[in-house]
Length: 114
Image 1: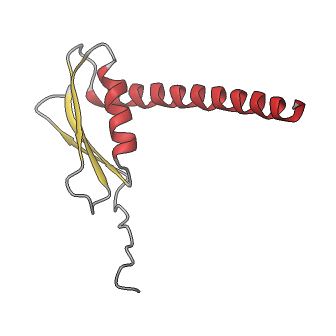
Image 2: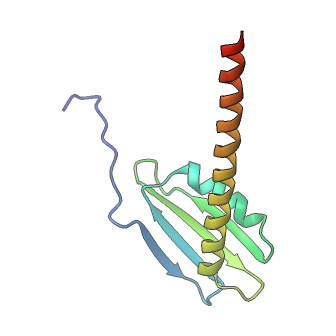
């Protein structure tokens, strides 16, 4: 291994849950993730009705974990809200991918016509 070669650590667990005082509050520790998922998921969850608080942190740059703190206020458990947020984010990503594919196909057709 070279002196400047860096190998990223992999997480021991894909998901850990640290429950708060009640079901509506929890910290989810997501393994092998970074700001990409953390910020997107935080944004989606904060736009969701019934979310009181959502924030994320990365404890240390060399650790492959995102800590996502979620508190709800509508009687929904934090775990249920997280699942709904992940589904919503997945739907949004699928929509963006489809729009990109259509735009790219249109671009290629225009290039062929020229």
